[in-house]
Length: 504
Ligand SMILES: [Ca+2]
Ligand SMILES: [Ca+2]
Image 1 (cartoon, rainbow, N blue to C red):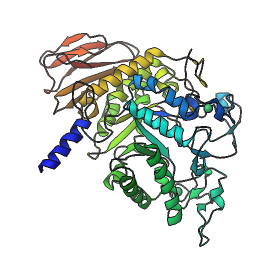
Image 2 (cartoon, rainbow, N blue to C red):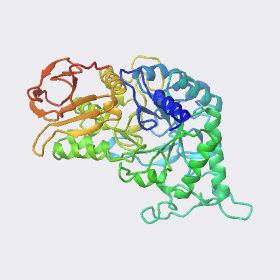
Image 3 (spheres, rainbow, N blue to C red):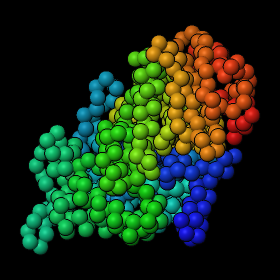
Image 4 (cartoon, protein in one colour):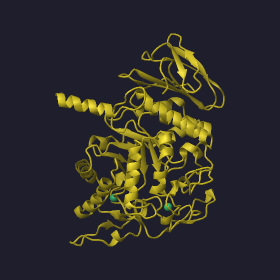
């Protein structure tokens, strides 16, 4: 390594450091906590763009916009998140679609609009309901001023159902879109996802148009990366060109997070091997943790799954969430039991990868399945529409805050290895995260049962000292020959640090 390279290495290393006690390193974005916002459902900061608002329609616009999100950035900075992912912002379908609501939810059928951003009618214009190009730029600047990165959701695979692109052709007469149904099981690239018109991204003119539009918008607004929608439905060759262009035209470290439906740390590897993206979603975290707290399967099985997530190609990241706009709210899935939900929050925030918080989840937003998994951000007594008057759980938010602080302060949680202590017949979950360079260790124990559980294990030799302290109630437990034994109250998780270490 020559002197310049050493200097560059040192700068990269320092830029990864946080305000916590110990420096953080590792792959880019490996230390981030990402917060996902559906703009329309978050905060209405501009009443002049509410032409289509119908707040009682679960599929209608509710009035949230870029200005509203910008105005609430202090709320998110206070929560401790370090990056925000916003839904696609381009102009949506001019009409709504008739939608049949799931009968069991008691919701009548409704007209479904593109309030979520995934039904684009015009890639060169911002959806007026969300705001303007300047609103987007102002939002990004305001986020950056608080040290928060911005990930913009972009779509390359499809347009809205009745977009003008359906009748567009190249000068040679080639259509821009495939309008047949196709079969996503047979060929995910050429099928119509959700019946949506499929861009013929293999046609150079189409490819250039979409890349120019999204990359141009990113450059203008200064976003730090893209979340790539419907990744598996666009060909690999496209993603190679996409990587080259984002690196060449935006920045070398422009971050790419792929939504490859069903992805796991191992199944995403082929995309990491080709370096098409930096990260992908781990779709199995949610269901695995919900299954664990709902007493499905043995604790060791969940613990082993968490270990498998570490078999990720060095330099790449998996993002793990509990709820999303495409899946039921996790709190509903665990029977609205907040104690069980908190166990999953503790595991999420102490696991390798990039935790993603779906807006409002941190204040126990209600809702269950679609379309109620996209309901309004709860604002309680604050005068913020559309979720004004919707109850918030501030205690849960404080719990998130403490865990995010803990995560930021401990490289063991973001970079460390993983040792499962749970044996085949143990009812409780217990694991240690350890990062060698900083000698940082964190122990996590969870009791999913309805009765108190005594848990005892020998800690790894890397554990510093002969005692450990609970980060919440500060109880110190002495080790005997490296072994601890303690009781965990029903349906709770406990997190311990070496007694010599400070939590934050
Ligand atoms: Ca508005
Ligand atoms: Ca496609």
